[in-house]
Length: 159
Image (cartoon, rainbow, N blue to C red; front, side):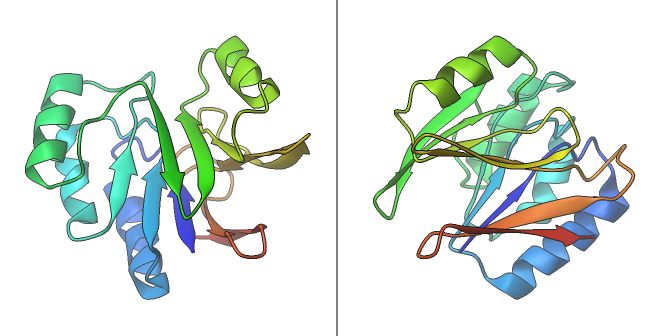
């Protein structure tokens, strides 16, 4: 199972609650779809199998990258392509909608993950499932998402 979250925007209290839920779920991978905002928030994800991308509100992208590498999460870029258990993923924050639409429409990926809108999304376009987990900040209801790869089931969890 994967856990997906986005738009934490330095909201420490909500992000701590989200990470507590994630830890209880013991996911094989955690993907953060951008707008972490500043490096210290990365410490909350320590010892989780997490990957991150940059959003459009990152205050210190170099600091995020440096700390991410120190914590073993790898480089944080503007996008992420990865394979996991035979499934292909493209992760992009979504602030340039034409890029998001192009990648989803390309039909190159099993999953396109994004954030930015702070709205939940679970949509299938051809062979590609598009998922936005909602947001951990500036949303009516704060949510994360889980993805069961065996069944292709998406669930939104309120924080």
